[in-house]
Image (cartoon, rainbow, N blue to C red; front, side):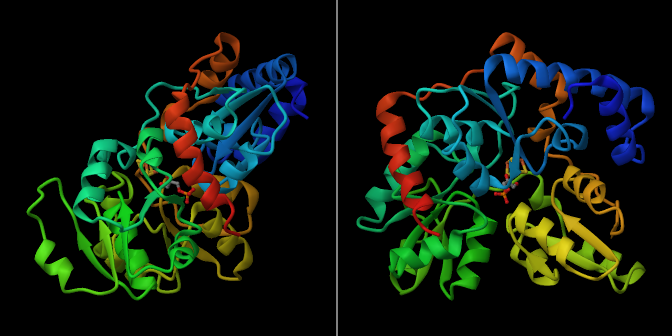
Length: 348
Ligand code: 13P
Ligand code: SF4
């Protein structure tokens, strides 16, 4: 569809003129046409997370979605090259599921504060402190941490994953707020473990149904507050507020809906209301507006994920031209991490 510069430019102007100036859209159109040519030459597919900037998200992404959808899609493609327009842990998941394919992430700096918050040694230490307690790790972790886990989960399947274990005590790592939200929804108590082995053993001992969490935080979602919500509701009393479950439980409880990025997009599409506020990465609101021009999303967002923001059309073009940055996962780690991911993917 985006093989011709003129029609690509027209398409971008129609969808994104309210977001970017025409001169920038023209430059982006040139890059889009170049990326489409490179995709054909290399038999490549582009997967794009819902947080991608609008010009990239609306054009070169062959598949778009939340972490779970993209993990499933990456397991199904027959392309030789997967360019993962998202952050490193997502590209790693694609590589774990596709060891013989080239998997590229367009920036070396696309990390994640949650993935950086815990190490494989931390998980081994927790297992030693809580013998026999199953370990669930959020997909926002690196391959070596997944390799120490029993099963992975994402923001869209965490409850089903917990239920599948049928256990009273579960280690749920590493996002503290997400774990608190899941504990509330699954009628379990929550306690937090730390690197200090003396932490909270006594309290944990007295609780029957419990999620044992870790103090990891998303550096984007931890910044939303209940005061933000109250301020917006005062100004726009009928606003519908959506919060990602990486926000604090107080923020989630003060919102109208909480779900994965794709669940939030679906919710806005299906509702009749006029005004929405998304408490998540800013680009998502721009992408929803581009696809649903009749909806009024309050553009009060000022928090971009610095890691997702590394991924641009320019970097994506360079990734295909220079074959960078190729993801590699040592085979012993890959096989163990794959077990935890496969077990999650089996749950429908
Ligand atoms: P989703 O799985 O909901 O897309 O979330 C990924 C993420 O990193 C949110 O910050
Ligand atoms: Fe990680 Fe938060 Fe960025 Fe998502 S928004 S990739 S959880 S830092």
